[in-house]
Image 1 (spheres, rainbow, N blue to C red):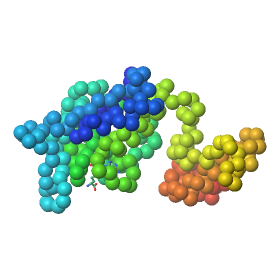
Image 2: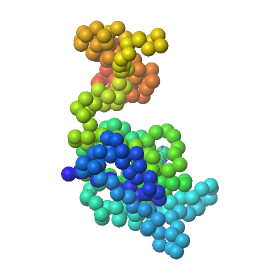
Image 3: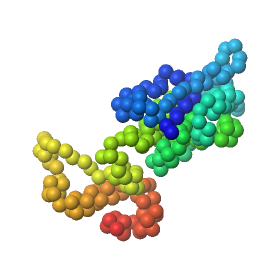
Image 4: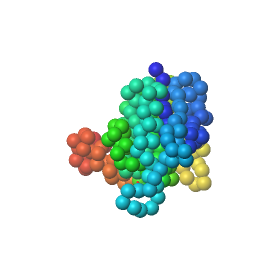
Length: 244
Ligand code: SAH
């Protein structure tokens, strides 16, 4: 069974975009995943094909209409594998995690909803069981680049898409820690060298060094991840820091 993505958007031309080339593009050619788009505007009913309206209560911008969105989602649901989660890209959503990406990649696919303007009429989320997902504490002009990110993260995890080399669980976030730093030849570059330990051939020492680097980087750059890492292992921060 291949992973089926349906993207509801006002800009279908943005897809597959970057997902049509390189790793994702090849995987798509091989039938490991598929994508189609639903033009939200096709589900407007008035002669101007209106998809948005002014915010109730006043204020700047325009809001995507709940009735139009609902028809677009219903259409996507009826024209693809059943039981796909519907996910709206929104800065008000729950931050996307690698764990959620893994769950999605293990499933039948996703229906993604891309916002524009000020976003969606709030009633769509409960009305169509829509999960709200945020891809970072930044504001984009539309949900399309966020949808591309989510799909990219899922596609690389699909069976047979990535070589064994990079599919391990040592990557950033997979182990709960950021990855250790990487180096490759040349050994000397503009006065900067590759850490001695990595050239020692001592696999035990290398593993210990990498673990400590991962711990140090996570602690200093991502205290939020670090706290979760310690909590998940029932460790006090000082135990965990010593690599226990
Ligand atoms: N007024 C909204 C922002 C709308 S941005 C607010 O303050 O929450 C327009 C659209 O871009 C959103 O509907 C959403 O689909 C997309 N978008 C912007 N930033 C995003 C983010 N960090 N994650 C996911 N989608 C985002």
